[in-house]
Image (cartoon, rainbow, N blue to C red):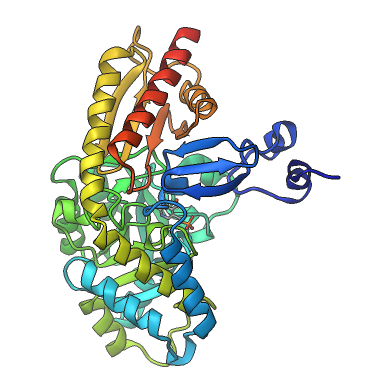
Length: 433
Ligand code: PLP
């Protein structure tokens, strides 16, 4: 009889995976169960999920309440479309809840099913907004180097990580990239292109897939100012950072700024069911209503999916009831303290950083104080996996970095376990060099 590994090799094309390695080595894990911060695989091996899967399982695994919310809604009304102004109760209630949670006057919501869809929706909405206001030439979208915005053709074009762009030989037009934390680079780009050609600037409040890069003080306040001065919409991609990941409900709150458009996905349902959202300010919403004519010709079959929205409402209820945002802040500090200890003890540990429960440890050659000629972080990740810890690495754009994003339910003992396995893995790799 064919094993699951055989079937996997033959039939499952995995996303963002080496197709050759899958054939040669097979799936490293086939998971069957999850509880809290732990996953168990087919062989019965239990691992601590240091990444909350893809930065998204904020409330942890095995939540019966979420299964119950989905079951209840599915039995009543699993799905009905939201086109032609038709609605369903969970979608309306979730839109109202997001309006209450998001900062400032971000009060109107367009639903999608993923972060990539939220991104492409935002680019289209921004261009549409300028077009109906009489500036159809405002089309360009400026994003940042090392930014990650997803894999739809628009989102890939906005993404500033070269290998993702090089995967395809043709990208969407009208996307520009500026230096990650340089407001001068943005100002220069606007000057060269002309503000009357630019629809929006998009940034992640903390860059995730680009290596957990945290903005210096004052950066985002300056960005907000530049966008306002030049009549450019500011889109905050909070797909990773939303719903407590950074120790606030949304990372924009750290900087006291309100974007014109906020993008959500991932933690909105803690990954229990796909859902994304694009939240716009009252001003944009009012102007869209005022200037639009006919039908807003943008919508996904699953925009406002009743079951997904019911799960999101319950997920947000859990985040609030269990004070997971406070836990993210407190456990994030524990994680950072642990990273500092590792930095003191282990020579190959370079810069470390966290904001809430998103963090990074950089690998450095202690002799030269530069990167090693080959990537070391993947070796640490492999040693950690052997010992029961899942982490991710970022090795493009000259980086050799380990990133962390555990479920927000993680407790002190589990943080200690994560740090202890990480320590063993780092020491094993250091000794092998
Ligand atoms: N935006 C950011 C900041 C992300 O990190 C991601 C995914 O990691 C996306 C967008 C794309 O989301 P999805 O994979 O749900 O399409």
